[in-house]
Length: 411
Image (tube, rainbow, N blue to C red):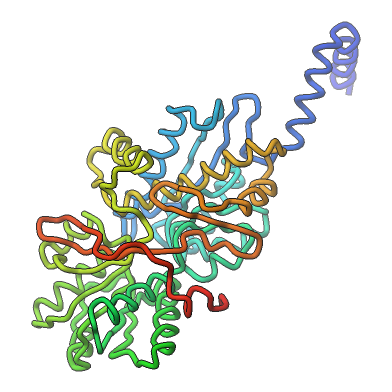
């Protein structure tokens, strides 16, 4: 009690003898009260966090997080936030949704993060939403494509709903490849279910039925029964929505069984990582992509290529890494807008300003737009094809998603 009184007395004496100091302290206290956790006004630092699968079935997904980290370091080095720095913290979740929630809680309670920025995983990000809503935590650029990610005000997905991407694949299969019998292989979680919704909607709009529609588990390595069913259904195109490892395993099984159909997959599998897993079996496969080609003559994409090559020279330069970089860049763009707004640096104000983002360039994405009640970020895709020698080329330019799916009411 005596010590507390003594300190109060000293503070009072200081405020009388040093009015400027007292005013400065008052302003600092007022400012600190007007910001959210994760904002250090004194050092001009904002702390963000993410979960990433360093272990588990898809450890190579950590490439996404390293590319995001490279983006934040590039921002700090180039002073893109005009004096402000980004501190990023990430923890391994093993690609397990329950662990993703535990990691997020740790990031909030121990690391005092301002927002999640580029967390990895579709089912993982969906699992975190209830906790994020509970604590008012923005989720910026979750690297996943589930319908549920577009239905929450705190969540700003840069990736498209995988249903839209599946519809883009199907549209190209029907129109570009003149396919008559298209099969879908879909990962049995939110990623695959989202893809199936879009696939089914566009099939119905075209008054067609899938040749087959078969789920598989994320850890699947043997696709023998799946490929036999697809072959028996005489499918001429197979669209697979799952990981790079799943696609490689399916291609190997198809080769072993002599299945000759064409293959299509989502953008994140159009990457050197998949070539390492599948080898030349990937040649000729098609991919829908919301990202510009990674070798484009563009300042944003060049920054990705140069920075990752410098900081993580063992990581491949490809669509996979550009995905991680671009989702990190979405937080950067949002925080730039928040700083420019002059509003207090709060989580709520970050959400407000991001809902005014219109036709912005964000990493490898173009025309990114968010508005109240509509958090669809990327709104168009092109078609990329794997070519002999391990490369990828754009074979159909970017165009809007099929309206029958893109404008359908979100579940």
